Length: 107
Image (cartoon, rainbow, N blue to C red; front, side, top):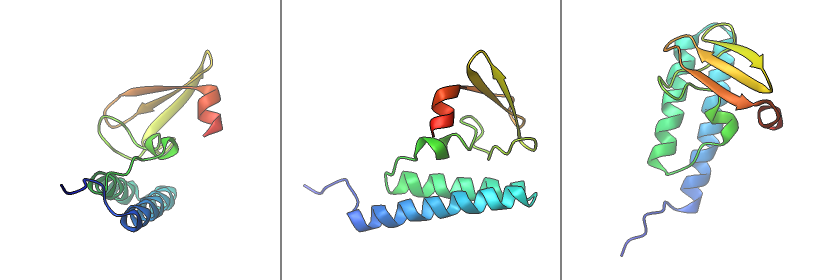
């Protein structure tokens, strides 16, 4: 039987590309090009799915779980703190994501 896992060198390259795309997305969002950031996120997720690479939690928190758009505070999202939780509201689809404040600071 054929193994379902990709070779280790391909997985390593995929992780490097995902990290690079998230860095590009952050830089584009800082320059005000949110549509480029959304495209980079889309490509990074696609690479992760193709090579069966799980995205780290700090990357997963940078995009909306529902509409898969990049979350840039003040541009495409709003952040508020309530009772030990950080609430991030996506301005594209109005979804609210909650994270415990200790976990969010640690990552």
